Length: 233
Image (cartoon, rainbow, N blue to C red; front, side, top):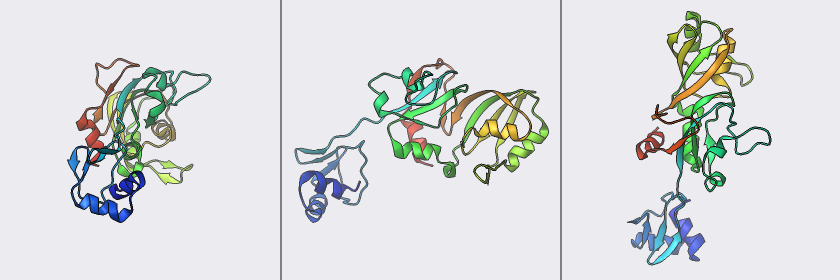
């Protein structure tokens, strides 16, 4: 929301009065003077005029979880345990999941209460690389690498996936990098070339890598640099 609107909404003054107050250098955003009435201010920033707090900052949460198999990427479910059960109860009502994994898949899962940030992380048009360690039922052929590089046609969405990369690790194991993150994308891509994924583990999203020492079911906060890496894209 624009700074001038926050002042006029919360402080009982007209928009023009708010603009004049801002121009006079009487408004502080996160402790710094702001004279730009059109500045977009998030709910994670405080706004103060004199000794009056107009908006209190909401604490922003950016978490990475090492998802175990068997947990749903959902806020609640009547049948299966969900990943929300792996974080403190006081945080659960505020968090949403950015980039889901299906119940059988494991690895990097992001939870946050910053919707604008998570949209950049998951929006296919932003082309953030997502890296998976994949095991398959059949050996991975050279044709698979070529088909993935060309893109796979998804009839349900009526589109061809962006080019994906395969790093062969073993006859039935590879590291796969995609740039969209569509519904069950990696599994559907392998299915399209006549193979089947038996194990899927997400290792990285953009500049956010799952630490090898983070146990399954455990979580930790992202670093400021990791959060900023998404905003820069």
